[in-house]
Amino acid sequence: MRQLTLAEILRLALPPDTRVVAGAANLQRPVHWARVAGTRPLAAGSLEEGELVIFAALPPPVAGEGAQRLVALLDEMRVAGLLVAQPPPQALVEAAERVAMPLLVAPATARPADLERAIVALIVDRRAHLQQRADETYQRLTRIALEDRGLGAIVQALADTMEKLVVIQDEYGVVQEAAAPRTARSDVPLPPLATAVAELQARTRELPWPRREELSAHAPPPQVQLLGDSGLARVVVPIVLKRTMAGFLSAVGPAATCDELDRLVIGPAAIVCALEIAKQRAVAEAEYRLQADVLDAALAGRFASESELASRARTLGYDLSGEHVALAVALDSDAARDRATVEQPRLRLRDALRRVLDERGTPYLLRQEEERVVAFVPASPATARGGRLPEALRQTLAELLDDAAVSLGVGRAYRGVTGLSASYQEAAEALAIGQALLGGSRTTHFADLGIRRLLFPLRGSPELQAFYDEFLGALETYDERHGTELIRTLEGFFAHHGNHVRAAEALHLHRNTLLYRLARIQAIAGLDLDDPEVRLAVQVALRLRPASALRRQPAMAETAPPEPSARAPAPEIGNGARSGGRPARRARERMGAHDQSDQSRAEARSAQPG
Image (cartoon, rainbow, N blue to C red; front, side, top):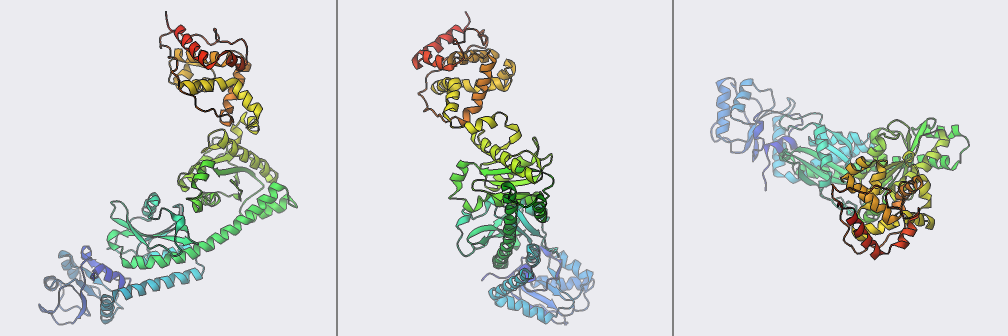
């Protein structure tokens, strides 16, 4: 059986306010037994190796050379250490420190015989003693929970008992409570609490429970994890509610001090924390239902008076008299599909959004819908166009949900109860457009949508598809067949308002190459880019690309015509590129796929110098 160390004796058997005044570096010495020494002088052979010597009263004299002779004798006998119940003379402290012998000072009220019995009992029946200590801790924490003193009081009591930093994180890794022991031991140096918290948050994904939603009915056993090369470790156990992950309970300290008692204590402590978290969540759920009732009434217009509804909102900490902004949040459809079966307990957007807003101290009203969560927050510069709050929220949510693809729509600011519905409709539309037309995984402000607000309701309609096909269909087919980027070139051209130099720089092209491509675009699509109406129609069609229902099968790649030399004179946009009218439809009728390829090569040759 593994022998107890002096550090474990200090922690498990001696009074909590026992001090180490010398030899703290040797607390890992094994302790075979404990013995109370009398006041008569010690003789060689009267003690055994590995014993902890307890002095009822220090033998005289222990000053000067007497202290040195006593310590030298104990060191010769290879005792584990020296324990006294009275303030030791400074000469004894210095002599013990000189040979690195642990010198412990128990409270003056402690009786040496009681100290001996406690140590011997621990040595004889170590496991039973550890279990008794764990049971006592569990009972103490349970009393705190029954007294409704909160999760913070539970964590503080656990930190004091374990003499470690104790941290509770939720299932997303966000810290809920953290505490350091109120009485720090000089022989167990602990890092600052903020440092330990930052380290744990950075290592959330390293926890040994990857499929957290598949926890068994009984809690998994605690694990010990080294925290890099810092010399620190954490004893960590999941907090489980109804077989789902509710968080993690961690005790952080020097790796050498993480022992069996920690593992016996932290498991039952996690159960007490789970009960407290369940109470907190029940309160939060009741508050959410009240918020949802207020929003349902406001958005449906089912309220007796605005003042009555505003009064209900004030009881929830939200002022309806000011300006509000609606935020609509959803997982992009692919992310929801891919993760639904794997991460279902962790993809509760409402819960994650509520936690983020609570952490920021932002007042809000929240409403869960089938595919999205809508939150109303007070309008401020941080929520306006260019404000950082919406995008910061979206990024934080994505991180909390294991880098899921999250989109967020932002409505404009409106005042009062009647403004809720207007901002809500705008946020929902901005979210839908951001996902359908802009690629998702982004924040979209309704105020930035421009013409997309008019185009979005037409998505999927035959007329919309016909319009797109008329102006860009031939270019899309050409790009697919030849592996070219004519549509991308057109987008870059319009993005820089038709400025050839800036567009060429942005596309990393020579200006002659850009002009050549624009000429090819006009020839292939039958477009006149000098015509303002055509330019407007093409820009509208470019806005429609993501919403276009038509998805052609990739054509067999053909060799694209060579780009002109950077020094070659390029045709100007209007010279010879017009197809005899606006519609691209006539250009496609005039060009078969084979003829188009031949004409492309001919035009490429004509663009070369000479």
